Length: 323
Ligand code: T6T
Image (cartoon, rainbow, N blue to C red):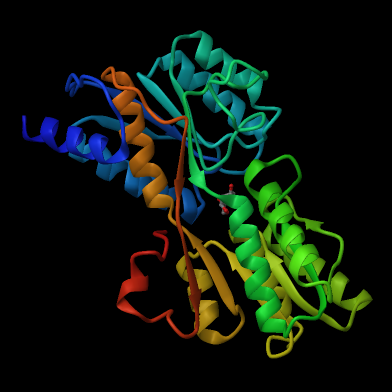
């Protein structure tokens, strides 16, 4: 009974409406982009906290690498086990539509967390991929703009920069790239954004790509690492070239490996997402839907900007990802 009231109180603050029927035998699967990424490990921490509050079960299961070809068989196995709801970070906005339709057609409510399929506008009656019931994530366009502002500030408003990213076709990193470029074009005309370097989520490749860009542009002023592995790799490349005092690195994501780089001076700014919030509200949203309440089709979570000035603050510690 206590849990029922706790759950309905959270649902009420989220703006969910309708009559709730508490149910404690529910099982939800959280299928991340990859299981070995601190971002998703932290999302699972939030998801498990919600599961505990609600007295339900959440399973965390996914591929070990970012790849729709590897994520699809894991998804098919999950569909075979018929969980009450699926929370998933689709690894490609287009390629994951049909695999996810199989879950939807099997009667499993789909909520996407972090990334979206199609255009991310769900339950609109238009588009191939509007069937998920909700999308819970950072505002990645805004995050890209925040990274651009931080970069422009650190490089003094002019110079050459480039974006290190995973691969095209992923909603999150595509939107960060779009937001970063739009902010530079609109507000920082003296910043030149060079061609984006895609690294397939491989930090070693991101490091060698930095070396290649640096060899062609010895005056490069900054790198925006648009996700954890891109940022770590770029920072390693910059440090390996002995250029950390001259080249600014702005990172998306904030595992300890990145905040340690901030303390050491290899990374200047990290835009931390709030993955635990995504996991918590993801499970709450699934629970609300499963117990007969209406839910928002989109829930946005926040960011925290971390620099050398605040990296050691007590208030910041809760935003550093779990590993
Ligand atoms: O940046 C996160 C996530 O938001 C993105 O979709 C994929 O990369 C991360 O998991 C970090 O590695």
